[in-house]
Amino acid sequence: MKQVRIGSGAGYSGDRIEPAVELAERGELDYLIFECLAERTIAIAQRAKMKDPEAGYDPLLVDRMRAVLRPCSEKGIRIITNMGAANPLAAAAKVREIAQSMNLRKLRIAAVLGDDVLGILQTGDYTDDTGLPLNRLGNRLLSANAYLGAQALVEALAQGADIVITGRAADPSLVIAPLIHEFGWAMDDWHRLGQGTLVGHLLECAGQITGGYFADPGYKDVAGLARLGFPIGEVSEDGTVVITKVQGSGGQVTAATCKEQMLYEIHDPAAYFTPDVVADFSAVEIVELAPDRVRVSGATGRPRPETLKVSIGYIDSYIGEGQMSYAGPGALVRARLALDIVAERLKMTAVQASELRYDILGVNAMHGDALAASHSEPYEVRIRVAGRTDNLREAERIANEVESLYTCGPAGGGGATKSAKDIVAVLSTFLPRSEIKTSIQFEESRHAVT
Image (cartoon, rainbow, N blue to C red):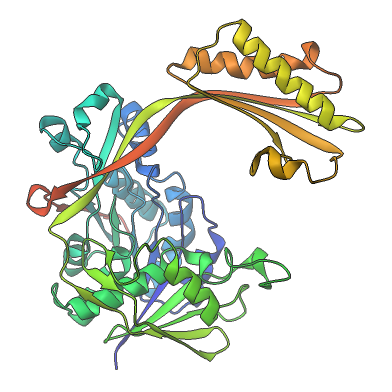
């Protein structure tokens, strides 16, 4: 039976690069995917593109491609990624430049377009998923990107793409696409698409399923986290997958790590909505075959939704933040006095904030004052004051009040930091599929060695 080997080279934008190189060099892969887009990431990328039309793709795109292009090219491993973020065209052009600079063979690099629907939402009478009109956001609206499915990625592979770069696509679709392409699955084969979605969901967070996020010393011990291996999915034609990793790499693949990842971000295991299928994980079977080899099967699916989710990024407000440390005898008392001073100063100087937080990190920042009273006094603490404002100037005033504790506050404060910036928030809406058009543009490393 034919098998496709897919490695997951990143679970988020800032992920390690070495495990992906290990996969490319020793994973015996057919495909290497990089999943690098969180909900707010693309909104932040869109803002970067507004400042520079050639920017807006993943900040680590260049480093990742320089690290894996050569082994992938030599071994015929195709790459699929959403590192295009807000600018897949510029990302594809950059990868072409990198390939040419490395004298790699002629590579076909596809940019998948169509997820950017900001123009559609700006010209129509749309509401968000709470029913409020989107036009209330005015010029605070930064981005609107539809979650594309696998269809356009499959078309790019069918046209011979060695590297496929998209923006906002559903995470599992990065994996379903090569499965559809390799196995010839129909786009309405809901059973296999449901199983393929499970495979994608298991692989999409990279090191989470090989023991990274799973690790909890003394309870769930995992060896070799500093050299954590990233996962490989050995996928059969019926969609059954064996999750494994490169032999000798750190971490572990067990039934428990697979179960945790399967349930990650799943609201209803019987109805996981994606652009490709409504997947059903409720009858999944997970079996340990050998050390670091776990077979997962039993997912199925129902027809895909007729609307696509759209993630909308906007400037919600501004945040000013300041921090300072206190150590030694009486550290906690001095920290509390410092917060009282800042609170009085903000009131005295009429700083305008819709929300304020006064935290002592390590004491009450996570669970409030009720639990803090039951613990012994720490030797060192750090205060944090943060406030939400309507403009940057007010945010800066909050941060400055903390820094001025250096000379105006209680004794022994040090290590002050401050910042003031806007807050990019996200909300969602839905658009009919018929309103979203995708396209593919190719770049080629024309000056490669033949």
